[in-house]
Image (cartoon, rainbow, N blue to C red; front, top):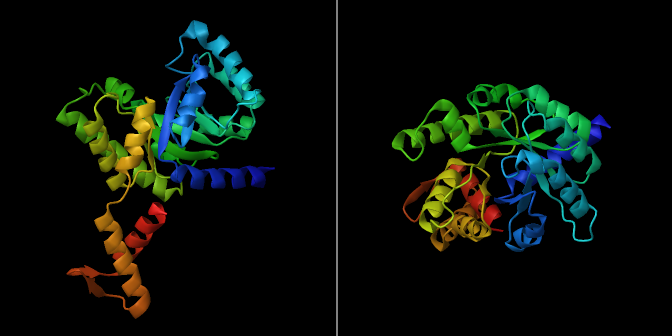
Length: 286
């Protein structure tokens, strides 16, 4: 059983690495799930945490089960409440009743033991959200947890905990340091590259495109979205330009023709790392 679970986690890591757009739907609005999938989102997350008031969580769980048992069901990710919450046990019990979930998003992750508890009791893959200073401090330890497939982060919560002023140059420095730390730890522990946090202003298309360019250039795998129209913008911003594709094709063609380790294309020196990057670009375009 353990080897089967590990194989499932490994397969999910690969799938997550190729998942570019993750769209949230409040658990109180299950009727929006169909619209979320219709947006073209690669993954849909039902949110049982911040999007649902405490008094509504029990009813929201029932709504999730009703959807799960309906003919319209498509595999979903479920964001559950943090491990220290009074709602955590109820959320775990729900996940046990929904074995075909795509996976679990653990809010405010802080301990490797919590991730392993989730995985061992549900058999599901886990994405850990870093939203507190303690969670950030424990990233390297959590990266080794059985069942973890990727990290993401909640930047507003983390800024509140660190007392960083959002929307400032200082906040940008903290965000990039956070991305770097998650990238290194994820790569060192053979996880999917991290998933970038939400872009709160869903009306700011230019700002969203700039954000996508930033995290994709840094090597992150995808992005959390809060509005359906963000999905298309994310996916469009990730498309390589014709110039980039043309250069990559020339590089690979010349490398395969000549077999040389070093050569020039369009005045640019090409060696093994450039060839590898061009292969990755063409694979992602396909």
